[in-house]
Figure 1 (tube, rainbow, N blue to C red):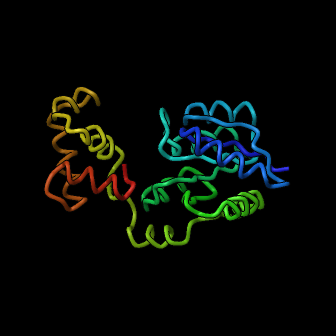
Figure 2: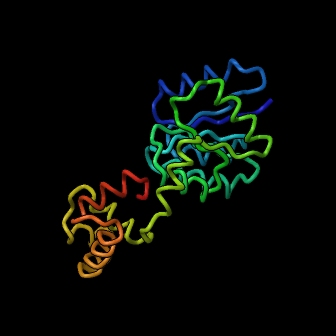
Length: 201
């Protein structure tokens, strides 16, 4: 029996996934979590064979949780199941040690088959997304540029960003300018939108 943990913040989606996977004779949903932080704690306690994670969750996102689970429960295979098929997310998922990256609108039978393949040691990636990730290229932003862009995505002032990240205003301006140039847009709002669209933030 393959023991599966589900981490998804939407109760209805999580319940539907649990019900669908429960129909498979060789799969058992042994735990559920509603946030990234909870997923790491539950994985540490339950030690499932597979952790199926959404990306956008409260607290830690699924990509951060994936890396933590891989570090703390190395025998657990991590799969990302998301609505957001962004090329940058796929790259970050692979860097975090995920074994699979699938989009939520696929058939339930494909998800069950992917779980079996991952347990057998394979990597499973949505083919269209893999092609998009290759054509998009790597994330051009440094970790600090990502931090600054992300902190300013809500329209915060330079002073607000500097205060939040414990940087000088001049340093924030330098990081923003560098990020804008790398993304090839006119201002930080466009840079944040482009980075979000590509899954770089």
